[in-house]
Image (cartoon, rainbow, N blue to C red):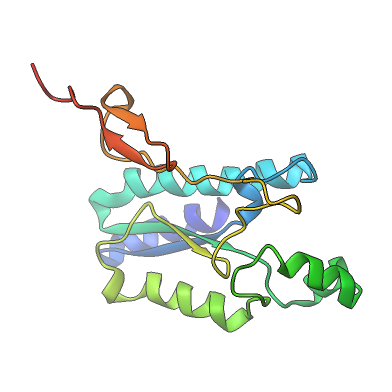
Length: 171
């Protein structure tokens, strides 16, 4: 919040810019073992960024969120102290490895670049293919994006996506 608050006036003077906030996959409901306060704080980053993107688009300021998955950092190594625990954790990552700091940096670099000039209010999940299944194989997270249409015009599809309701816009 404070970084965004400080950057907005400077970006307005410069004619625009890109704000990239880092959240966590913990912001997406995944299971009963999550820490509630951490999850809530990361979800707040996500929603703050979405609102900031809408409020500051008029100033040519883009705001996006990066959601890192399990990244090979000292914090992750501390949380996964044994090879067995790491191996079990990686069963939920389709690419079968921890991400690297460079994986995240390249995603941030893209969002900051002119190549992403039409990308705002978006979530970039950098997570090795997903964190969608728990130890028992059951689905634990589903991404549903509802952006443009009024919610009465949308219906959730069986695949977890969204589609226009057949009667949307018909008047």
